[in-house]
Image (tube, rainbow, N blue to C red; front, side, top):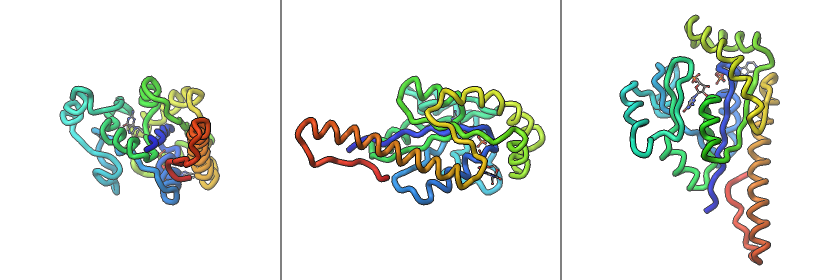
Length: 211
Ligand code: ADP
Ligand code: 5GP
């Protein structure tokens, strides 16, 4: 079985990353979302186990301190703790699924140290529009909004470290861009595998995941 692709997505809060991802996942088979653990409070409509595993700080630390750590990476973001489940991600990659990690720039940097993920940074068309979207979502207190907007500029300084950059101006175009990136990366990987098999004189190429 060919291992799946690890896809890391980062964006300033309110940029539209969740919206884009939900659209892409709705019609691209073989793609699964890595549900992170977080100490932040659930927003209205968010479901435990689907959007996040909502845990206390003590529970988070206990997972972090397992040997080896239960988290592939973890970070403090906007005053809350967030971590990616090691077991969840490794098992699904081993099953040949392409796994999406929605993580911040610190988490992406940590993942790059130990793996070769495909990384995508999603930027807003402007900081003014970012603020408008964050406010219109209506999920943040004024304090949380200030923290997220203050961090946005810093996060965008890391955009050049990513494999791809998408500017989420028109939603349909951003969705198409992410979909195209995933399909292209699947083709790239398949090409490498077939090349190797043809070289070895075996034409019964295993093509791996969809796309
Ligand atoms: P994130 O996951 O990056 O924090 P969301 O996906 O929750 O952001 O989007 C923040 C808000 O912006 C939501 O209300 C969403 O409907 C809206 N939004 C997302 N993309 C666009 C877009 N291209 N144009 C206008 N509004 C958008
Ligand atoms: P939110 O609170 O808006 O859901 O997420 C805030 C930030 O935390 C976003 O940038 C999101 O990508 C990031 N995040 C979510 N899960 C993780 C994780 O497991 N690890 C890291 N490093 N960041 C995460």
